[in-house]
Image 1 (cartoon, chains in turn green, cyan):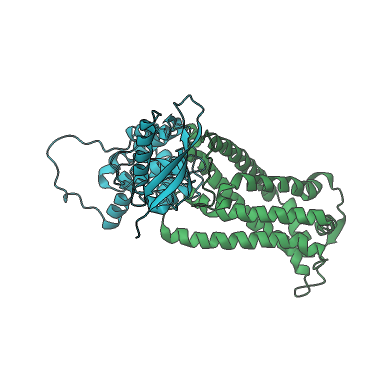
Image 2 (tube, rainbow over the protein chains, first blue to last red):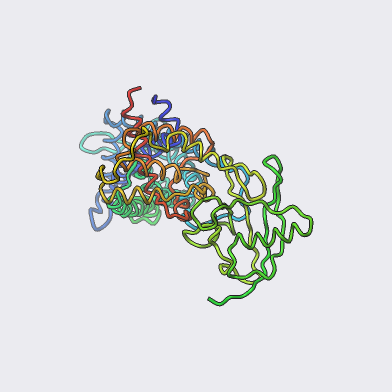
Length: 236
Length: 254
């Protein structure tokens, strides 16, 4: 059994999807955590924050060598997940041949578990928009980024960029649709990844199913609240 | 339950051979007893077709008691029809109402080419079994059944997996036409027993290789297979297969 044989088999391909999926799930925790720093400005916390906590966190992520190296790994994971996902989708679709006149529909499976390709595509479209809004300016063009000074260090005012970006309603709507797609994608993907990795113990499956649902809700709602919160001027 | 006779309309897939394109034809099945099995209803219809000098509808069947796995109809958008944990031969006409239109299709998967009408070629499953779904034993005196102690839970799980009759409903139901539930049942059945242990690694690797060669899709854990399985084979067998496969691959010498 060579590595090639392993990773080109149907189980091996799914293993890649599961492993990269869990890696991206871990990344989302970090991403959501850092972005949630914008809520430090909420009246119940510190109305004088004005995005300082978020800008400092974003600066740390952008200026730490180790994290920049991990960023390459992150992109590799995303690209692998996307390419492998599309290849599997194409392979799976072609294995039917003639379609059924009457389909099973939701009889026996959930719609979102059958729509991972579609949901993934929506997330990919969102991701392109999202990267062009924030990642490209922060790393390359510096367009629309004002300098901000904290403790004598000049940083990018990413919080201000967020405020500008989310002042347009269509952007907020697009982001909410992205979060909605992410929610359903995670609702299936979280537990499915563990099953693919071979978890069959009922005890853990029950536990992870609950964690998966909780994770999907918390992450998606938290992300969706960021454009909504800024648009509605909860934080400014 | 009250016995009555009903009239139903059947939309049946007709296809001369694997090269033919195939299409639906509509038939009236009149005066059908609700006590009849679905296949008996087809027998009555076929008798009529033969009497009229027409080609009878070809369909697979053997034991007609729900244990052989030969019957294979996709009825009204569900393998083996509307009843849970049931085979087509055990589906009875009381599941339908007078005047119903019933759509009957063959299993649809490239790996299961249509032989004729509702009959599909499921020898792909045989080849998966031939690739490793067995235990090699030297012939000799039969060993006493109790000489190898087996944990009760494992014996039960193994037996539950061994219930698979290889009908192919899992493939028919899966949106990817994946044969993972079938293959996993066969792998789990033997992997859980001490007798299956010596060939454990080669078995799972060879069976998956054959499964892929046959052109079945990959598993996306939707659960449709488990929902239609007449023997209620659990999807947890697929997770067990994934574990068996990964550990076999990672611990192989080559």
